[in-house]
Image 1 (cartoon, helix red, strand yellow):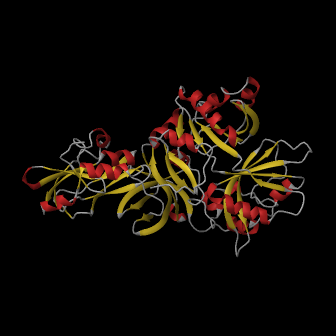
Image 2 (image 1 turned 90 degrees about the vertical axis):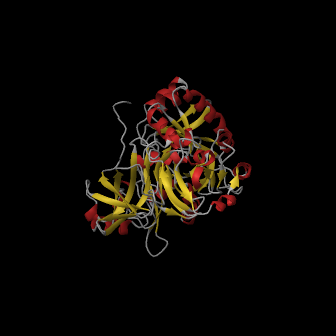
Image 3 (image 1 turned 135 degrees about the horizontal axis):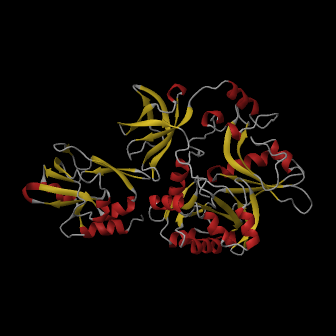
Length: 383
Length: 128
């Protein structure tokens, strides 16, 4: 498929094209889906490390004396009291219509304070939702006290993931920074100089592996990427496209907006209770989500593991005997497991682990077992 | 690739054998473009197929693609070893990687297919 020239590009687009990246339109961005083999990129990340250009993700910054209170009123996770260097997974909800909707899922983090002592916060949102999240937040911006900026185009974001990711990243830092990065807990962030470039470093990711995500100035992206690639190659690191990113997150049981998570999703039904803190809070839709939590109904998210390598895909029906009990939200061959897996929304009476269901793949039924998520969990002892 | 092959625009190749039987496979271009093959569904021997209609499926990590019959006829032989050894498609697409053999209803249909040069210029103008 020819790729339109009107697509947005990351600072690394030239590198991708020069290294065999198969460029596709992803949420309006020209992005590599793979370089050579999705399976090889996936397995390199599980065994060694993968480096991913995730600059298409939206990077928003919030500052000013009112920043904490303002975000506290808008996000499903608590922001007041968030410590410097802490990252939280949150939903962004709006109640502008008849009923609240989930606009996106995001990471909110608190950076070191500004020189005037006011808080600085950051939000990382999905590329597909960036514009509407920016529009929604802008519509709720108070007249004074909060500054809000979309820094997506001034910065780049590189994820380094896998058992050797920390080795690769810390090898590009001076000892003090390396030590600080090495000692970061999960969902903690710091700033450091990596390969000579000031970077925001967070121990987060979307693969089920250990690793970090780095945000640098757009002008530093190619230099940092090439340094990372050069340092990582001997460790078995591979550059990975969005194809491997998707199979990795699927094995890790992570929801993806537009698939498992949608505007009308009840977060409880997809296992995201922890992303919605209702204790004494009043973000958009809080009472609606509280009522849903107290009266669970509707379909729930499950994992499906097929016996075959053949995968059900998004939109395929899930059957229990002759009854349709659900729909697949994501599905693929899982390179680490060697079989096909899927996530699906199914009726509660068909959701118990061990239940045998059928995925309907182009008129053929393929049996699958309801499997607890995640499908894949890294050996944390190894780290 | 061998010069005696003909190609469909949908990337299947055909080699005419004796007695009106035609061997059908998937071009090396298509195999390379698909990458990460995980599954293949083939028809039973005896099935009647029509030119341009799907006779099987090939699935990669990213997507499912149909295999289209380049000519009408009856499936007289199926490479049953292939679905268990999909890497053969990449290693030897015009030999061991053959997919089915079709007894043609109308050998004149072969004239509708592309020769090697025409196929190469077709795929040469297509980005992967």
